[in-house]
Figure 1 (tube, rainbow, N blue to C red):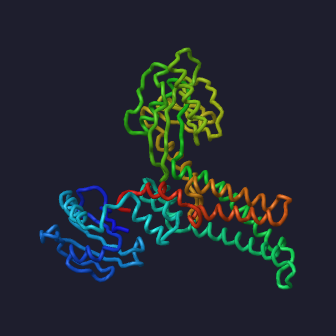
Figure 2: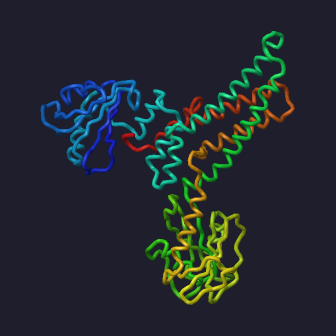
Figure 3: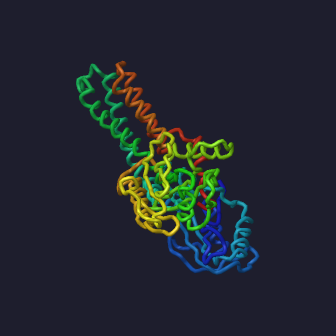
Length: 434
């Protein structure tokens, strides 16, 4: 297997560029480019030269011998000046070595997985950590990258393996004196508790989705209630046309924000009313679809000219918000939140309420939730198998088989069994050099 190399430090130019290598030829590359092999894990200043003797750059080099490296193979890093020409010339030189080639996306991490440096949940967490843009996404990624998810699922799997072992011992050696009789009293209580824990864990997946994908907030209301003005103020720029003419907004306009450390998707929708205009009807149908998917509806009213609107079916929380506070206050019972999108009156109170709402959507510190939808689907398989094992009136052999299926579902999450078809998909999410 060839030694791989890649730029690992991101876009150029930069102050420092880090080129990473992994594989059997690392020591040979170090000897020929730096002139020596450094002491393990000691960063050393060196002059880097081409085979011709030409000086490529002067920088730092560090060597990580196997197995105590990120990939489990011999690894090295060259820390160069971050100019495009410097890095390009250095990579070109490495390409001349017959046992070396440029790494593919995620190949360093895939080799680390193959060497047992981390499991699949940790690999996925590492990929998510690289792509995290908000605090909530970082926290969610760390659940996987830290190994917390793997520990939880492996503990559950260990419980099931032990239960199966006791059942199979009773089935195979029922006539032996040292094998316990009825296993039900000894294991089914534990399996029942595990089943409840898995179901509770699955329920928390909805909050993980919000932390990863964001809170969906929809601004709804009658035409001319000020919806476009509100989204413009949220965006701090003009993303929607504001006019006195009703029905100006014909399509859903979206902006992305960060509130309370969470990604937030805010959608401005067409005014809800009866209309014969075909294009406006399409906009209203789009608004109904967005309202049905939302986590929060901001039902906006012009407090000085309120119009009754009928919202489509939704399970979202609904806030009644009175706009045009600059023209005077409205009924606080009807509009608990009041603001002026034009002047900014009441705006800070409104943003504060939104931030609190978003923070409630995050998980508590220390709580572990399913990080990816793949995890949730396999957990559902596990829960269904446990339900059959606990409550189906079947022979003990069949109940033991359901425990095996539940155990296998957990093993597929961590990558302990049958995940070869997933590896290309998961590691392709990584950037080059990771």
